[in-house]
Length: 148
Image (cartoon, rainbow, N blue to C red; front, top):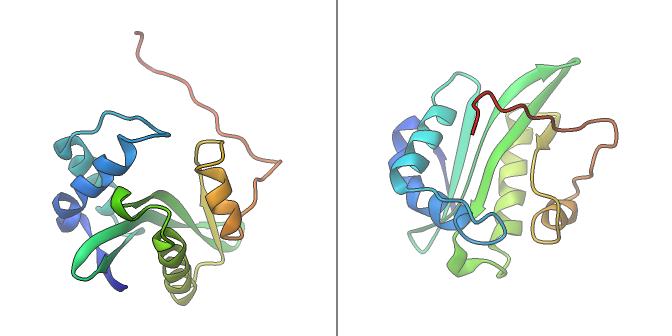
């Protein structure tokens, strides 16, 4: 697997992988390549942003995007997006890519990785296999600012 650090200028190249991954179960989102590219561009356009892509045989097969922050004396990497091409899901690509991401984050000084993901066997269990745990003291809270 070959790795490439990515930035806002790479968002267009990453959009199809992102949309394809998140439009499929269990998320069933409705991304277009245009909206996916805009999301990734926004997320990768900042001093604390970090993105990594993986290629196998010259073909994009996985990507991760997040940002660094200092929290309680630790450097934390907030993993915002992590996806694998559907054609290679279940073949160990995600596990190999996550290990490569973690190795790079350690070299960049990260003390901890955090993420929000859907509960359920296809998402939460993948991250638990990578050594992550659910945090009982934290929760995700949401308030909509637009009426429907």
